[in-house]
Length: 624
Image 1 (cartoon, one colour):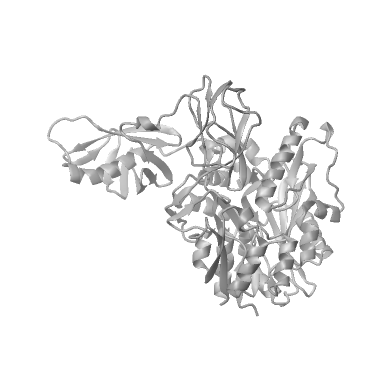
Image 2: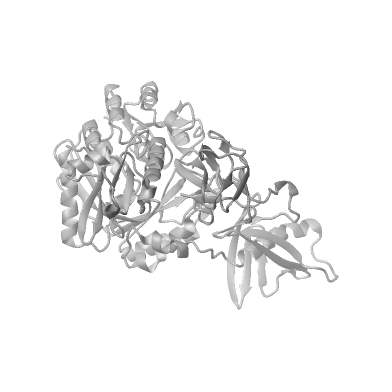
């Protein structure tokens, strides 16, 4: 029996595996980079081993170091999680060669399916080689890994070479494998997948379907099980194809076969030879623990002949630290609080007070709701996210709530083009107009006792300024004999943590949390602005500031101070959280300053370049 498991991963998935191991009485071992020294997964494990460095290439992609860590810590099994080395056949062999149990499929199955090009060949599908106008649009795709990394849609042949280069660079950084291929891009289909589970005794389960059509940048955002609206015949076909793919490579363990469903037909995409990010929705619907079943299979136990029956519906939303108002740039900083209402499953690699760094994927957590019907599960998850306390960097919470409540999603008629059509409307700023006033009154309630409260003479109103949703808001209020007042709004109660306001006879409660200049009023985040701006923070007109912390990986060839640049011209590329982000010139003009070079790490707001033009200063143009 397995007594100790090392998880060759980090963050949420490492914590998820540890949770099952602890419930089973199995000792756990974490590996951590220097950037993850105090990460939650390193803290909750029974033991941890340092991987020197911070980049994935130096740490979580170093199979040799991870195997040495497992041996040194006395682990007798390795679980790969997802991403990094989870679909690396050489790593699986190295684990086995060290005398350890590999909690995953045989290396030969990984080899056959982990490369999407080889998987397609196995299923009789050939990738595109000589792309012509007639083939457009096409998708450039990394052969290894997943999670949307190393993928680019190409609609113009002129952009194909650049897309191939960018996809190779991103795939190399994320997976250590720069192989890419090209396939037809089927627009407005549905992304449907089948969870499979196979033992060493010849049994293969097809555990229903999952719909993962709501994607942005080829990264899944919302997933659910079962996939809504499929006919019984199509569902049976998907199950048969998934089982056939698993049997074709003598698969063992948990895996997922992915399809694009268009015009009532299933088109094979790939087989992921690992546990998926969205596995909790299958667990909720079938009442199982997939990690526990992985452990049992690795110990040689047999599955039942038939899988358990599915019950109800489950929906999962991925919560990311990213800024919708700034090109969805990844965000970093202190996560002060993360809680959701009871009844919602929250899988996360963070806890209150943890720091979100620049080196890895910006996913904070996965929130999962299960209910007897799809409508109930969707409503429950949307309401829970709306009421969740998420204090810290900007997140995609509002997008998730609005997506779950969008008519095209609630009706089950979504497809992979959902965000292409609706993103602008879903990301429109709609902050609570009373949030700045509530923040000001909460602050004033604490100051009143310290500075003398009301005066028995007419006085000017108190004024406070806040930044909210990219705009500046000014609020005014008075101290009076009866307390704090604001024009048009009755102040029922105000203290540092709670404000109750009444308008038109309706009372609303605002819970206040302050972390430095950042203030959270219910689900609205604000930044307190200084009364007198600091001149030292001003930048020259035309300054391009880093929209996120990261590393400058490339500067456009031939770019020097004095060069004339065109509006939209790429100037440099930042790498943050495993993805490359292109910074372009906002206007046509002269490059008067370029204080950065490849390899330099920058913080958010750092000066990247200055373009003398007519647009004035800004954070620059961020392109994906």
